[in-house]
Image 1 (cartoon, rainbow, N blue to C red):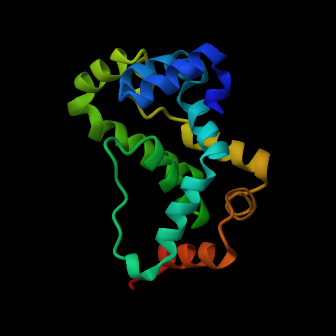
Image 2: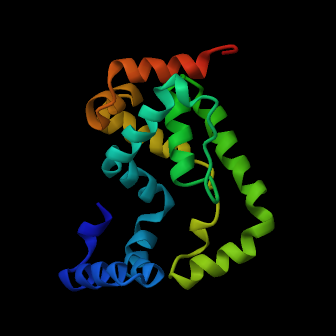
Length: 178
């Protein structure tokens, strides 16, 4: 967990800044540790610790009343990218196709790269957090397979997604036309 890398002093500063509404200053405390982990390390860390959030997303995806659904965020390459990867792996899409799709996101982000670089630079992060590096999806998938056995086992056993939810999401992803 990223916060576990902080000293007690850093932790209390982080909490104090967040409570007082200084989000960007708080993130600056985390940024040296994020830099050390890199984007792939941060994604793997998210897989391991953001299980509550992953479960919430899969619960929403499994409910037919929520469809059609749009999954998006500011850049779509970090948290959203991870969720989309999990969905595609669950639907048994091949790694190379997921990897190609993920890397394509970078060209869509190119027009705003300069402003994004200023933003992430201001919180102490380097360019590695502004790109969609080749190999990230395969690295994250390998992490899931090595640590949990498979994406399905990860979702069922670590995240706590029910078998019914998992099958509903898979059915929706593989449906020709609903």
